[in-house]
Length: 306
Image (cartoon, rainbow, N blue to C red; front, side, top):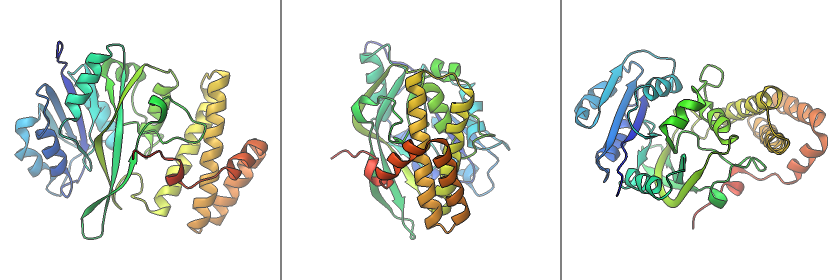
């Protein structure tokens, strides 16, 4: 490459002894040499720190002390990043061996791009600890930021120009403990920065019962949907949006509330389902009716790569 940028990788971690070694092995296996690796541990007590110490040779900066959760850890690490580009690799997840090299090539090919997009594969962890591929998520139409059908936004599972991340501000884990990355990506995406993409699968994320998003459990899904609706309300009430962006967020809010109605009912939370139904019907009756008519389970609207 004519220009080989330093790329920062950040891993926030707390008590992930069962999974983090696969994360480290994937960083160690990268085919790109110019990596600035930061690991921020929230004071683990389960053997995680001992595993980290075994991989100190690939880590430029590491500390272990109590923090306010993974988003606080990312905020701390971002202040220390030395790379032109930054990516977050969660302690449950791992990268393809050529992930960083591919992102560097994307940056070289499009020097104006600020967000680097790629496909992600969900791996579900079975009861005996085995992993099996579940779904591949890719960004339709070159990752144009759209909210019409509630398109899934992987906020942390992308690479960004470090300067863009710093301009966007901190992850708000205090307000959004489960989905601060989703709110942060909306904050960035509504500015419509330049993006580039590859169809290659570069990131693998583990879905298991202990994951922050709920691990596929119905109760965790309901809580995530409640937080997504909270994000949408916040943007509609307090953020300066263009008319088109306001339409996007309204549609996303209604789609989220339709899902919340169905998932809360399936989880036996009938009062929450009724509250979500009446709130959305009162706010946006026609739009809500259309979203109910077009409702699909998540697998139906998450795009796949053949």
